Figure 1 (cartoon, rainbow, N blue to C red):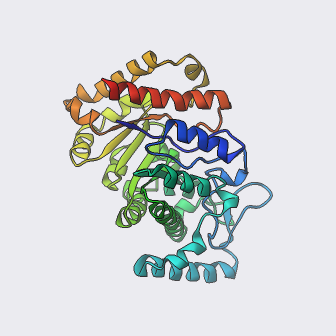
Figure 2: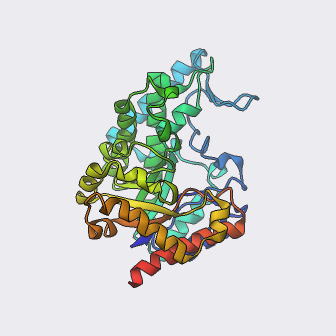
Figure 3: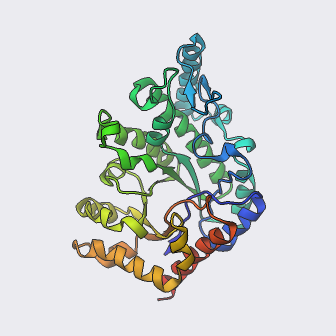
Length: 347
């Protein structure tokens, strides 16, 4: 068994963050998102570089300037670039859509860490397309998720951001694992997004997942609340990451799909270390977390899924990112993730 982490850490120094990564995630290191270095590293806009006619006005809302004639020129050029990159594998052109150091202070040192340790796998991430499409709006303030053109644009820009990471990680010698962070997936089917169909969201996820997998990577999806887990399964995501500390029973609702998912080689990253609950994390120790993990797995075994099948396809993980924690609590969370994984490897 191995361990994974979600992404964000509360450090203002990339090397300090990467020391934590090296100490506790040396088998599958992750690229830390550091909002204390720059607000550009917030998941809300870390992947917006190169987005056609996008701007952030003074009121803090993220918008497409859809009423400007330049928008359509930018969109046409972007779609031409996308087709060239995807169809012809023009990775020189892909650099146009790279993630600059202003938006990813730890990414280049992260690549060096991969090379230094000869890692077999390494994890990157993007904001999930459904989540990003609910954050961004057009000039009139209407969420981009309701506009087919803007949805397509978001999916394709995120596909290129994922593909760029895939290529950079591969050049460093590791197999890339690229996660989509999709907290808004908990709202699919709710009254707020009632007109957005399950199929539309599945297709958004699948297009990005296919781009990752067709270019030599593995795809993952993280959602830290109750959601319909058959959506990422139907999108053919390789790894599902959940807040198993609080919502493990929700996963068992979809036990028939989960069993087929595991039998086909799908993996579950069990978020057992409670990074969203500071009081719980302060009290947490290995015995408490061990019991939590056993209880989480038991929800599936009670539905008839073989325990060995589950355990053979499991990762230990935090419930969510650690960027909002103190440095001390964040390190405790990362250490407990590593130590719980080691406990199961020693048994």
